[in-house]
Length: 112
Length: 111
Image (cartoon, rainbow over all chains, first blue to last red; front, top):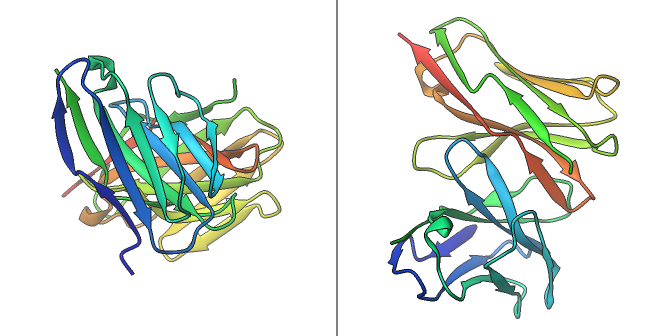
């Protein structure tokens, strides 16, 4: 099992560009999450999904959109990147919360 | 909104000594409290968790205690080793699906 995977691992964007981050899990988990991690601020929830075809806003959703068309995939989109979105992005999944969340390796995004 | 406070932000201990990290939470409905370890450049990984019907849980050198009345929980690491050096995060469940995270504690083990 690969667990949770994320692509890409690194990306540099210019202000105003768009991109999509892909998260995939092979554990048949219903619940998936997108977090951002900034120095000294821990993990902040951007959006989450409780099942295929459903999404919900987390703590810091502005500037991001998500889609969960397939159970195993959760996509995070930035329509018009801003320097404030420079961060490390982690995807996670869980079987039946509240319970352990399994994290992907992260995507380091820099917006110049 | 709901929040989790974590202290200290940095903790430096001598190898072999014990380390204690403390967290307080605000949502009285929280019932699940995990601790994650994140090594430099790696993903967070669960090291121990506790649910609200239990006051203490141990796993070898690691233990977690929970005081629901005071709304605080703590991570205890005994006989610290160099490989314990990492950032540790506490979290508390919120509205069943979510976790609210502390800001992290950087643990430094001095040889």
